[in-house]
Image (cartoon, rainbow, N blue to C red; front, top):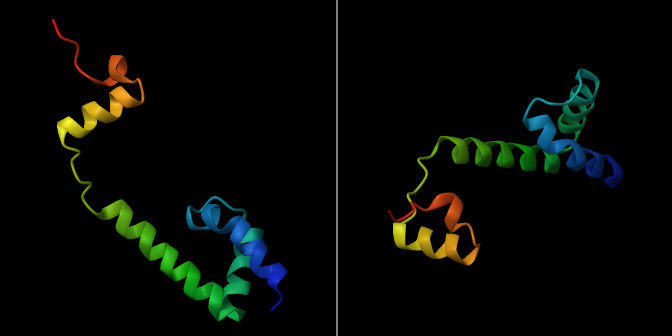
Length: 84
């Protein structure tokens, strides 16, 4: 396997994992993965990482941290409750 084929895989990896590539591109990637263990390991690892990220509970941001962040980003008028 040449490195150019692996680079092509990297260019299409995110859309591939999201199911957003054509059947032709999908078949090309799957053929490459059947022949290239390094890319197969990388894709499997990324697939598991995406799964864990999407299925793990998201931590709550403490209110004081949120306020400091929004003030620093000058987003207070959009996201922080306005004083009456």
